[in-house]
Image (tube, rainbow, N blue to C red; front, side, top):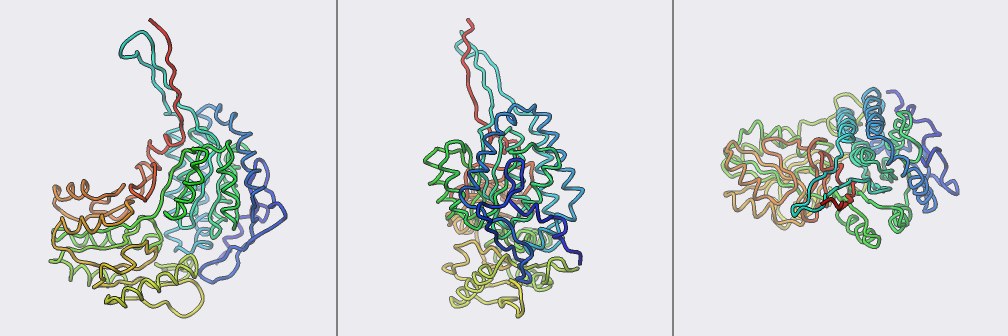
Length: 486
Protein backbone atom coordinates (compact mmCIF):
# COMPACT_ATOMS: atom_id res chain seq x y z
CA UNK A 1 0.00 0.00 0.00
CA UNK A 2 1.22 3.56 -0.68
CA UNK A 3 2.13 5.71 2.28
CA UNK A 4 -0.73 8.14 3.12
CA UNK A 5 1.75 10.23 5.08
CA UNK A 6 3.24 11.41 1.80
CA UNK A 7 0.36 13.89 1.47
CA UNK A 8 1.35 15.77 4.64
CA UNK A 9 4.84 17.22 4.41
CA UNK A 10 6.89 17.47 7.64
CA UNK A 11 6.60 21.27 7.64
CA UNK A 12 2.81 20.89 7.80
CA UNK A 13 2.93 18.66 10.88
CA UNK A 14 3.51 21.75 12.99
CA UNK A 15 1.12 24.32 14.45
CA UNK A 16 -0.80 26.49 12.04
CA UNK A 17 -0.85 29.97 13.61
CA UNK A 18 -1.51 33.12 11.60
CA UNK A 19 0.45 33.00 8.37
CA UNK A 20 3.01 30.43 9.55
CA UNK A 21 3.57 26.76 10.28
CA UNK A 22 5.59 26.81 13.46
CA UNK A 23 7.05 24.56 16.11
CA UNK A 24 5.60 24.53 19.60
CA UNK A 25 7.30 26.79 22.09
CA UNK A 26 10.20 24.76 23.44
CA UNK A 27 10.07 22.40 20.47
CA UNK A 28 7.95 19.68 22.12
CA UNK A 29 6.39 16.99 19.89
CA UNK A 30 4.26 13.91 20.35
CA UNK A 31 3.76 10.68 18.42
CA UNK A 32 0.70 9.79 16.38
CA UNK A 33 0.08 6.04 16.11
CA UNK A 34 -1.70 3.76 13.69
CA UNK A 35 -4.22 2.00 15.98
CA UNK A 36 -4.18 -1.09 13.75
CA UNK A 37 -0.48 -1.69 14.36
CA UNK A 38 0.49 0.46 17.34
CA UNK A 39 3.35 1.89 15.29
CA UNK A 40 4.22 5.60 15.20
CA UNK A 41 3.34 7.19 11.88
CA UNK A 42 4.29 10.82 12.59
CA UNK A 43 5.53 13.32 15.14
CA UNK A 44 3.59 16.57 15.46
CA UNK A 45 4.05 19.73 17.49
CA UNK A 46 2.87 19.52 21.10
CA UNK A 47 1.52 22.96 21.98
CA UNK A 48 1.40 24.58 25.39
CA UNK A 49 -0.54 27.53 26.77
CA UNK A 50 1.70 30.11 25.09
CA UNK A 51 1.01 28.56 21.68
CA UNK A 52 -2.74 28.61 22.23
CA UNK A 53 -2.63 32.27 23.14
CA UNK A 54 -0.49 32.98 20.08
CA UNK A 55 -3.24 31.41 17.99
CA UNK A 56 -5.78 33.65 19.73
CA UNK A 57 -3.58 36.65 18.94
CA UNK A 58 -3.68 35.67 15.27
CA UNK A 59 -7.43 35.03 15.27
CA UNK A 60 -8.11 38.35 17.01
CA UNK A 61 -5.91 40.29 14.60
CA UNK A 62 -7.66 38.74 11.59
CA UNK A 63 -11.17 39.12 12.99
CA UNK A 64 -12.11 42.62 11.82
CA UNK A 65 -10.92 42.13 8.26
CA UNK A 66 -12.56 38.72 7.88
CA UNK A 67 -15.85 40.00 9.34
CA UNK A 68 -15.76 42.86 6.82
CA UNK A 69 -15.00 40.55 3.90
CA UNK A 70 -17.98 40.45 1.51
CA UNK A 71 -20.12 37.37 2.09
CA UNK A 72 -19.65 36.29 -1.53
CA UNK A 73 -15.90 36.24 -1.10
CA UNK A 74 -16.17 34.22 2.12
CA UNK A 75 -18.50 31.89 0.25
CA UNK A 76 -15.98 31.42 -2.56
CA UNK A 77 -13.29 30.39 -0.06
CA UNK A 78 -15.61 27.73 1.35
CA UNK A 79 -16.54 26.52 -2.12
CA UNK A 80 -12.86 26.26 -3.04
CA UNK A 81 -12.30 24.19 0.11
CA UNK A 82 -15.17 21.89 -0.84
CA UNK A 83 -13.77 21.34 -4.33
CA UNK A 84 -10.27 20.70 -3.02
CA UNK A 85 -11.54 18.09 -0.57
CA UNK A 86 -13.47 16.32 -3.32
CA UNK A 87 -10.49 16.40 -5.67
CA UNK A 88 -8.16 15.06 -2.96
CA UNK A 89 -10.69 12.80 -1.28
CA UNK A 90 -8.64 9.62 -1.66
CA UNK A 91 -5.60 11.22 -0.03
CA UNK A 92 -7.65 12.56 2.85
CA UNK A 93 -9.50 9.27 3.32
CA UNK A 94 -6.29 7.24 3.51
CA UNK A 95 -4.89 9.67 6.07
CA UNK A 96 -8.05 9.35 8.18
CA UNK A 97 -7.85 5.55 8.09
CA UNK A 98 -4.18 5.55 8.99
CA UNK A 99 -4.52 7.67 12.13
CA UNK A 100 -8.05 6.74 13.25
CA UNK A 101 -8.48 3.10 12.16
CA UNK A 102 -11.80 3.09 10.30
CA UNK A 103 -12.05 1.13 7.03
CA UNK A 104 -11.19 3.07 3.90
CA UNK A 105 -14.78 2.94 2.62
CA UNK A 106 -15.93 4.60 5.86
CA UNK A 107 -13.18 7.22 5.55
CA UNK A 108 -14.25 8.04 2.00
CA UNK A 109 -17.77 8.53 3.29
CA UNK A 110 -16.49 10.89 5.96
CA UNK A 111 -14.65 13.00 3.40
CA UNK A 112 -17.79 13.34 1.29
CA UNK A 113 -19.83 14.19 4.41
CA UNK A 114 -17.28 16.66 5.77
CA UNK A 115 -16.80 18.37 2.41
CA UNK A 116 -20.53 18.89 2.14
CA UNK A 117 -20.47 21.21 5.16
CA UNK A 118 -18.24 23.60 3.23
CA UNK A 119 -20.58 23.52 0.23
CA UNK A 120 -23.69 23.96 2.39
CA UNK A 121 -22.32 26.89 4.39
CA UNK A 122 -20.83 28.51 1.29
CA UNK A 123 -24.46 28.87 0.26
CA UNK A 124 -25.55 30.03 3.73
CA UNK A 125 -22.84 32.73 3.84
CA UNK A 126 -24.74 34.91 1.36
CA UNK A 127 -28.08 34.38 3.10
CA UNK A 128 -27.36 35.87 6.51
CA UNK A 129 -30.10 38.44 6.88
CA UNK A 130 -31.47 40.97 9.36
CA UNK A 131 -34.85 42.66 9.18
CA UNK A 132 -36.44 46.09 9.05
CA UNK A 133 -39.98 46.80 10.11
CA UNK A 134 -42.29 49.35 11.66
CA UNK A 135 -42.72 48.98 15.41
CA UNK A 136 -46.21 47.63 16.17
CA UNK A 137 -47.14 50.78 18.08
CA UNK A 138 -45.70 53.04 15.39
CA UNK A 139 -43.40 56.02 15.81
CA UNK A 140 -40.12 54.24 15.09
CA UNK A 141 -38.53 51.49 13.06
CA UNK A 142 -36.94 48.22 14.22
CA UNK A 143 -33.66 47.26 12.54
CA UNK A 144 -31.86 44.02 13.39
CA UNK A 145 -28.29 43.47 12.25
CA UNK A 146 -26.59 40.04 12.48
CA UNK A 147 -22.88 40.18 13.32
CA UNK A 148 -20.22 37.48 13.76
CA UNK A 149 -19.75 36.61 17.43
CA UNK A 150 -15.96 36.86 17.25
CA UNK A 151 -12.99 34.48 17.62
CA UNK A 152 -14.13 30.89 18.19
CA UNK A 153 -12.42 27.99 19.96
CA UNK A 154 -13.18 24.50 18.71
CA UNK A 155 -12.35 21.27 20.52
CA UNK A 156 -12.93 18.32 18.19
CA UNK A 157 -12.97 14.54 18.75
CA UNK A 158 -11.00 11.71 17.18
CA UNK A 159 -13.86 9.64 15.74
CA UNK A 160 -14.55 11.90 12.73
CA UNK A 161 -11.30 13.87 12.45
CA UNK A 162 -12.36 15.73 9.28
CA UNK A 163 -16.12 16.00 9.57
CA UNK A 164 -16.31 17.30 13.14
CA UNK A 165 -13.90 20.12 12.36
CA UNK A 166 -15.71 20.91 9.10
CA UNK A 167 -19.07 21.01 10.89
CA UNK A 168 -17.75 23.79 13.12
CA UNK A 169 -15.34 25.68 10.87
CA UNK A 170 -17.63 26.04 7.84
CA UNK A 171 -20.50 27.90 9.58
CA UNK A 172 -18.07 30.00 11.61
CA UNK A 173 -16.25 31.18 8.50
CA UNK A 174 -19.54 31.72 6.68
CA UNK A 175 -20.69 34.01 9.50
CA UNK A 176 -17.42 35.96 9.49
CA UNK A 177 -15.73 34.47 12.56
CA UNK A 178 -12.10 33.45 12.94
CA UNK A 179 -11.20 30.11 14.49
CA UNK A 180 -8.79 28.16 16.68
CA UNK A 181 -9.15 24.39 16.49
CA UNK A 182 -7.69 21.96 18.99
CA UNK A 183 -8.05 18.49 17.43
CA UNK A 184 -7.88 15.27 19.42
CA UNK A 185 -4.33 14.15 20.17
CA UNK A 186 -5.03 10.73 18.64
CA UNK A 187 -5.98 12.21 15.23
CA UNK A 188 -4.30 15.58 14.59
CA UNK A 189 -3.01 14.87 11.08
CA UNK A 190 -6.33 15.19 9.22
CA UNK A 191 -7.03 18.60 10.75
CA UNK A 192 -3.55 19.81 9.84
CA UNK A 193 -4.13 18.62 6.28
CA UNK A 194 -7.46 20.46 6.20
CA UNK A 195 -5.73 23.65 7.36
CA UNK A 196 -3.26 23.24 4.51
CA UNK A 197 -6.09 22.76 2.02
CA UNK A 198 -7.87 25.86 3.30
CA UNK A 199 -4.66 27.87 3.05
CA UNK A 200 -4.36 26.81 -0.59
CA UNK A 201 -8.06 27.62 -1.12
CA UNK A 202 -7.41 31.25 -0.25
CA UNK A 203 -8.62 31.49 3.35
CA UNK A 204 -6.62 34.45 4.76
CA UNK A 205 -3.96 33.99 7.46
CA UNK A 206 -5.29 34.03 11.00
CA UNK A 207 -8.80 32.91 10.05
CA UNK A 208 -8.02 29.21 10.52
CA UNK A 209 -5.56 28.31 13.27
CA UNK A 210 -4.82 24.74 14.37
CA UNK A 211 -3.11 23.91 17.65
CA UNK A 212 -2.20 20.25 18.25
CA UNK A 213 -1.43 19.17 21.79
CA UNK A 214 -1.47 16.38 24.35
CA UNK A 215 -2.14 18.97 27.06
CA UNK A 216 -5.70 19.96 26.20
CA UNK A 217 -6.57 21.51 29.54
CA UNK A 218 -3.38 23.56 29.65
CA UNK A 219 -4.07 24.98 26.18
CA UNK A 220 -7.85 25.42 26.22
CA UNK A 221 -8.39 26.88 29.70
CA UNK A 222 -6.41 30.10 29.04
CA UNK A 223 -8.30 30.57 25.77
CA UNK A 224 -11.64 30.39 27.56
CA UNK A 225 -10.39 32.77 30.25
CA UNK A 226 -9.36 35.39 27.66
CA UNK A 227 -12.03 38.00 26.92
CA UNK A 228 -11.14 38.02 23.23
CA UNK A 229 -12.62 34.53 22.84
CA UNK A 230 -16.35 34.78 22.24
CA UNK A 231 -17.47 31.28 21.33
CA UNK A 232 -16.70 27.68 22.30
CA UNK A 233 -17.86 24.65 20.36
CA UNK A 234 -17.07 21.19 21.69
CA UNK A 235 -17.86 17.66 20.54
CA UNK A 236 -17.06 14.91 23.00
CA UNK A 237 -18.12 13.32 26.24
CA UNK A 238 -20.70 14.80 28.58
CA UNK A 239 -18.15 14.66 31.41
CA UNK A 240 -15.65 16.89 29.59
CA UNK A 241 -18.46 19.09 28.31
CA UNK A 242 -19.51 19.89 31.87
CA UNK A 243 -15.94 20.98 32.70
CA UNK A 244 -15.76 23.23 29.65
CA UNK A 245 -19.16 24.76 30.38
CA UNK A 246 -17.96 25.72 33.85
CA UNK A 247 -14.86 27.34 32.38
CA UNK A 248 -16.89 29.11 29.70
CA UNK A 249 -19.26 30.55 32.31
CA UNK A 250 -16.77 33.07 33.69
CA UNK A 251 -16.73 35.02 30.42
CA UNK A 252 -20.33 34.07 29.54
CA UNK A 253 -19.19 32.55 26.26
CA UNK A 254 -21.56 31.44 23.56
CA UNK A 255 -21.37 27.65 23.55
CA UNK A 256 -22.34 24.77 21.32
CA UNK A 257 -22.06 21.35 22.94
CA UNK A 258 -22.51 18.07 21.10
CA UNK A 259 -22.08 15.58 23.92
CA UNK A 260 -22.62 11.92 24.72
CA UNK A 261 -25.43 9.68 23.57
CA UNK A 262 -27.22 6.49 24.56
CA UNK A 263 -29.40 5.92 21.52
CA UNK A 264 -32.23 3.41 21.62
CA UNK A 265 -33.11 1.61 18.40
CA UNK A 266 -36.67 0.26 18.46
CA UNK A 267 -37.90 -2.46 16.12
CA UNK A 268 -41.68 -2.85 16.16
CA UNK A 269 -43.42 -6.08 15.23
CA UNK A 270 -45.03 -4.42 12.21
CA UNK A 271 -41.68 -3.24 10.80
CA UNK A 272 -40.26 -4.46 7.51
CA UNK A 273 -37.51 -6.62 9.02
CA UNK A 274 -35.26 -6.28 6.00
CA UNK A 275 -35.39 -2.50 6.35
CA UNK A 276 -34.92 -2.76 10.12
CA UNK A 277 -31.91 -5.05 9.76
CA UNK A 278 -30.27 -2.77 7.22
CA UNK A 279 -30.95 0.25 9.41
CA UNK A 280 -29.72 -1.45 12.57
CA UNK A 281 -26.45 -2.46 10.93
CA UNK A 282 -25.82 1.12 9.83
CA UNK A 283 -26.90 2.66 13.14
CA UNK A 284 -24.75 0.22 15.13
CA UNK A 285 -21.70 -0.31 12.92
CA UNK A 286 -21.15 2.99 11.13
CA UNK A 287 -17.66 4.14 12.07
CA UNK A 288 -17.09 0.81 13.89
CA UNK A 289 -19.72 1.88 16.40
CA UNK A 290 -17.49 4.77 17.51
CA UNK A 291 -20.18 7.38 17.03
CA UNK A 292 -22.20 9.46 19.46
CA UNK A 293 -25.39 8.58 17.57
CA UNK A 294 -24.64 4.85 17.35
CA UNK A 295 -27.43 2.51 18.43
CA UNK A 296 -26.46 1.75 22.01
CA UNK A 297 -29.52 -0.32 23.00
CA UNK A 298 -31.61 -2.35 20.56
CA UNK A 299 -35.20 -3.02 21.66
CA UNK A 300 -37.17 -5.55 19.60
CA UNK A 301 -40.88 -6.22 20.05
CA UNK A 302 -41.42 -9.74 21.33
CA UNK A 303 -43.24 -11.30 18.30
CA UNK A 304 -40.21 -10.62 16.02
CA UNK A 305 -37.42 -10.72 18.60
CA UNK A 306 -36.21 -14.23 17.80
CA UNK A 307 -36.10 -13.75 14.02
CA UNK A 308 -34.54 -10.29 14.16
CA UNK A 309 -31.89 -11.39 16.67
CA UNK A 310 -30.85 -14.45 14.66
CA UNK A 311 -30.57 -12.50 11.41
CA UNK A 312 -28.79 -9.56 13.03
CA UNK A 313 -26.27 -11.84 14.76
CA UNK A 314 -25.61 -13.61 11.46
CA UNK A 315 -24.86 -10.29 9.76
CA UNK A 316 -22.62 -9.10 12.57
CA UNK A 317 -20.71 -12.37 12.60
CA UNK A 318 -20.08 -12.17 8.84
CA UNK A 319 -18.21 -8.85 9.02
CA UNK A 320 -14.48 -9.01 8.31
CA UNK A 321 -11.97 -7.35 10.62
CA UNK A 322 -8.53 -6.00 9.75
CA UNK A 323 -6.41 -2.99 8.85
CA UNK A 324 -8.63 -0.30 7.40
CA UNK A 325 -6.41 0.14 4.34
CA UNK A 326 -6.71 -3.52 3.35
CA UNK A 327 -9.24 -4.61 0.72
CA UNK A 328 -12.54 -6.05 1.89
CA UNK A 329 -12.28 -4.95 5.53
CA UNK A 330 -15.59 -4.08 7.20
CA UNK A 331 -14.37 -3.43 10.76
CA UNK A 332 -11.13 -1.58 11.43
CA UNK A 333 -9.19 -0.98 14.62
CA UNK A 334 -10.64 0.94 17.54
CA UNK A 335 -8.86 4.14 18.42
CA UNK A 336 -6.70 2.77 21.26
CA UNK A 337 -6.19 0.06 23.86
CA UNK A 338 -8.33 1.90 26.40
CA UNK A 339 -11.33 1.51 24.09
CA UNK A 340 -10.74 -2.24 23.77
CA UNK A 341 -10.37 -2.59 27.53
CA UNK A 342 -13.65 -0.70 28.05
CA UNK A 343 -15.52 -3.07 25.71
CA UNK A 344 -13.98 -6.11 27.40
CA UNK A 345 -15.15 -4.83 30.76
CA UNK A 346 -18.67 -3.97 29.57
CA UNK A 347 -19.17 -7.38 27.99
CA UNK A 348 -17.77 -9.18 31.05
CA UNK A 349 -20.04 -7.16 33.33
CA UNK A 350 -23.12 -8.06 31.27
CA UNK A 351 -22.19 -11.75 31.15
CA UNK A 352 -21.57 -11.79 34.90
CA UNK A 353 -25.10 -10.47 35.34
CA UNK A 354 -26.65 -13.15 33.13
CA UNK A 355 -26.29 -11.98 29.51
CA UNK A 356 -25.38 -14.43 26.74
CA UNK A 357 -22.95 -13.69 23.89
CA UNK A 358 -24.22 -14.85 20.49
CA UNK A 359 -21.26 -13.72 18.40
CA UNK A 360 -17.93 -12.07 19.22
CA UNK A 361 -17.18 -11.11 22.78
CA UNK A 362 -13.44 -11.85 22.81
CA UNK A 363 -10.67 -9.68 21.41
CA UNK A 364 -8.39 -11.41 18.89
CA UNK A 365 -4.73 -12.19 19.44
CA UNK A 366 -2.09 -10.07 17.77
CA UNK A 367 -1.22 -6.38 17.49
CA UNK A 368 -3.65 -3.50 17.13
CA UNK A 369 -6.69 -2.25 19.00
CA UNK A 370 -9.26 -4.65 17.58
CA UNK A 371 -12.55 -5.90 18.98
CA UNK A 372 -14.96 -8.12 17.04
CA UNK A 373 -18.59 -7.33 16.24
CA UNK A 374 -20.49 -8.63 19.26
CA UNK A 375 -24.15 -9.37 19.96
CA UNK A 376 -25.58 -10.08 23.41
CA UNK A 377 -29.04 -11.19 24.53
CA UNK A 378 -30.71 -11.57 27.92
CA UNK A 379 -28.96 -8.36 29.00
CA UNK A 380 -30.29 -7.30 32.41
CA UNK A 381 -31.42 -3.75 33.07
CA UNK A 382 -28.58 -3.15 35.54
CA UNK A 383 -25.81 -4.01 33.03
CA UNK A 384 -23.36 -1.15 32.70
CA UNK A 385 -23.52 -1.16 28.90
CA UNK A 386 -27.13 0.01 29.03
CA UNK A 387 -26.20 3.07 31.08
CA UNK A 388 -23.07 4.26 29.27
CA UNK A 389 -21.92 4.93 25.73
CA UNK A 390 -20.53 1.68 24.39
CA UNK A 391 -18.65 3.41 21.55
CA UNK A 392 -17.71 0.22 19.75
CA UNK A 393 -19.09 -2.78 17.82
CA UNK A 394 -21.06 -4.28 20.73
CA UNK A 395 -24.85 -4.60 20.46
CA UNK A 396 -27.14 -5.59 23.37
CA UNK A 397 -30.59 -6.77 22.24
CA UNK A 398 -33.59 -6.47 24.57
CA UNK A 399 -37.28 -7.20 24.13
CA UNK A 400 -40.44 -5.17 24.76
CA UNK A 401 -44.17 -5.82 24.68
CA UNK A 402 -45.77 -2.35 24.55
CA UNK A 403 -45.01 1.13 23.28
CA UNK A 404 -45.37 2.67 26.73
CA UNK A 405 -42.87 0.16 28.13
CA UNK A 406 -40.20 0.78 25.51
CA UNK A 407 -40.66 4.56 25.61
CA UNK A 408 -40.08 4.55 29.36
CA UNK A 409 -36.95 2.42 28.98
CA UNK A 410 -35.60 4.43 26.05
CA UNK A 411 -36.03 7.71 27.93
CA UNK A 412 -34.52 6.40 31.17
CA UNK A 413 -31.14 8.04 30.58
CA UNK A 414 -29.49 11.41 31.10
CA UNK A 415 -28.75 11.52 27.39
CA UNK A 416 -31.02 12.56 24.54
CA UNK A 417 -29.04 12.80 21.34
CA UNK A 418 -30.57 10.36 18.84
CA UNK A 419 -33.00 7.49 18.52
CA UNK A 420 -34.30 5.13 15.86
CA UNK A 421 -37.66 3.49 15.28
CA UNK A 422 -38.75 0.96 12.67
CA UNK A 423 -42.47 0.59 12.00
CA UNK A 424 -44.84 0.64 9.02
CA UNK A 425 -47.53 2.35 11.10
CA UNK A 426 -47.37 6.10 10.46
CA UNK A 427 -49.35 7.03 13.55
CA UNK A 428 -47.12 4.83 15.69
CA UNK A 429 -44.02 6.47 14.20
CA UNK A 430 -45.39 9.92 15.05
CA UNK A 431 -46.15 8.84 18.62
CA UNK A 432 -42.54 7.69 19.00
CA UNK A 433 -41.28 10.93 17.44
CA UNK A 434 -43.27 12.91 19.98
CA UNK A 435 -42.55 10.61 22.93
CA UNK A 436 -38.82 9.98 22.61
CA UNK A 437 -36.67 12.54 24.44
CA UNK A 438 -34.08 13.02 21.70
CA UNK A 439 -32.87 15.80 19.48
CA UNK A 440 -32.87 13.55 16.40
CA UNK A 441 -34.81 10.50 15.27
CA UNK A 442 -34.36 8.09 12.41
CA UNK A 443 -37.66 6.62 11.19
CA UNK A 444 -37.06 3.47 9.13
CA UNK A 445 -33.46 4.49 8.49
CA UNK A 446 -30.21 4.12 10.36
CA UNK A 447 -28.34 7.07 8.84
CA UNK A 448 -29.56 10.47 9.99
CA UNK A 449 -26.55 12.83 9.76
CA UNK A 450 -26.92 15.43 7.01
CA UNK A 451 -25.26 18.87 6.67
CA UNK A 452 -28.62 20.34 5.67
CA UNK A 453 -30.34 19.11 8.85
CA UNK A 454 -29.96 20.43 12.43
CA UNK A 455 -27.71 18.07 14.42
CA UNK A 456 -27.87 18.21 18.21
CA UNK A 457 -29.35 16.75 21.36
CA UNK A 458 -31.45 17.50 24.41
CA UNK A 459 -30.97 16.82 28.12
CA UNK A 460 -27.27 16.18 28.83
CA UNK A 461 -26.47 15.43 25.20
CA UNK A 462 -25.80 19.01 24.32
CA UNK A 463 -26.67 22.62 23.63
CA UNK A 464 -27.30 24.17 20.23
CA UNK A 465 -27.45 22.81 16.69
CA UNK A 466 -24.87 22.13 14.00
CA UNK A 467 -25.64 21.98 10.30
CA UNK A 468 -28.69 23.39 8.51
CA UNK A 469 -29.60 27.09 8.66
CA UNK A 470 -29.58 26.82 12.45
CA UNK A 471 -25.86 26.07 12.30
CA UNK A 472 -24.84 29.51 11.04
CA UNK A 473 -27.06 31.23 13.62
CA UNK A 474 -24.85 29.75 16.36
CA UNK A 475 -22.07 32.08 15.17
CA UNK A 476 -24.08 35.30 14.95
CA UNK A 477 -25.02 37.96 17.47
CA UNK A 478 -27.94 40.29 16.71
CA UNK A 479 -27.86 44.02 17.28
CA UNK A 480 -31.22 45.73 17.49
CA UNK A 481 -31.52 49.42 16.59
CA UNK A 482 -34.62 51.46 17.39
CA UNK A 483 -34.74 54.26 14.79
CA UNK A 484 -36.95 57.22 15.56
CA UNK A 485 -39.22 57.85 12.60
CA UNK A 486 -42.70 59.31 13.35
